[in-house]
Length: 262
Length: 326
Image (cartoon, rainbow over all chains, first blue to last red; front, side, top):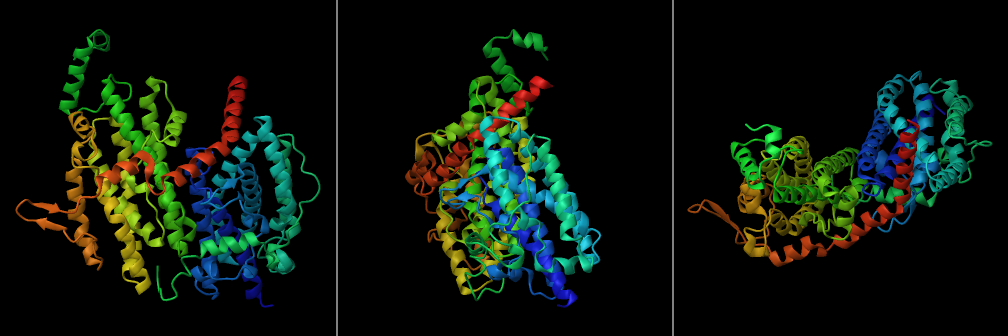
């Protein structure tokens, strides 16, 4: 594979992670526990979509095609996001009988954002300069996002018994597929050989150490290695949840073949 | 000027007189100032309704947030709806300060909403079945809201005026966003233009209703007169509706759209717009909680509120523990 193709594989992972993660966040609009959180979470979701946009733009500049087409018109098998991030927030849809799990959302957001922070720190040193510039831009917002989810995590872990039980269940659930977030997919060795990003094992361990410490501070032990039960999204393996998400995200985009702009 | 001590010893009538003198002088009333009961209750009603309308206003657009057709449009509508929720939060805080002496808080606002005691704007009871509806909402519903909110900027209640100042600044971005959405559709394919025209047809009557009835005659009651007496507001519903028509009718026509009212014309002699009155009986039904989307949107809000009750309980416990430790 050419250098260019390898590099694009990595940037698709970054773009698709942020795109899908932002989508799951936007489904919570109007449904979160209180109005102040609605203001905060929808701001984070918007930032995250902005991050996806920056990564898709990098791909566009590399000749991959129009960024809107990349976001809206690819097949699920071409997506490179982690499966954990495509998982539904709960049963129902965002418009019809949503039964969403706030504990799962807090834990998924926290765990992913700890990884994202680790990832961005590494990307700042990337041999591909546009990537390191983008990582620096994102990092300023990332700091606040992470702080937000840490606050939720710490508070819910140290409150009522019910909240503790829900949170522990959510951690176990997220843990089952968190391996797919850390994975860099089948080209991992090529990424680090070209110094686009540090090796999967190094970043992964750094992220797990941070998470281990966070959990320990609220008397919870993360045991064993995180799993990848539903498959590896980095290699194009996905679930029905992604297919449905993409149908929603591109519904208007595909609604009129004649439309030249929106 | 009387001192605070002297003021406390005035009779209710004298306090009222002093209050009205302040209103007449154009002074701003603050949260902790003495105010007549009906000033307070009217403000609570107006501001809580305004705040909760912003909150419920997120729902018609919520559907289109993930579906927005390009990355730019996604970012713009996300920013817009986030602003609206922020406005709702800001306004509810103003209402909550007014409610405090009555022993009421956010929980009462939410329960009043769920039980349909707290009303919200007619437009947010309506369906928004296509992307063009999101465009019309951003352009014309926000455009109508800017007119009412600009009028309210001079309100006699200081905290409301200050909240509105920030809101108006953000709303002008929303109207630009709406304009851009509408322009893209109006200059687009047949399908896009048709979608836009149909959305305008759906929204025209709700838009005219948005400003409220001309007088109490149409719906049986109105707070407009009291609100004008207290300088909470400065224009009547009809004056605002006329402003709206003057501003938007030419713009809508320039886009090549047809306004679904054949009787609509500007009467040069009277210097006013003549239009087909919306169905005020229908309006009354809608704001009393019987609009086409009222129940499903309230259900979304109520169900999610109930399902996340454990989170609010957990936060209360956490904060209580922290206060005990700290």
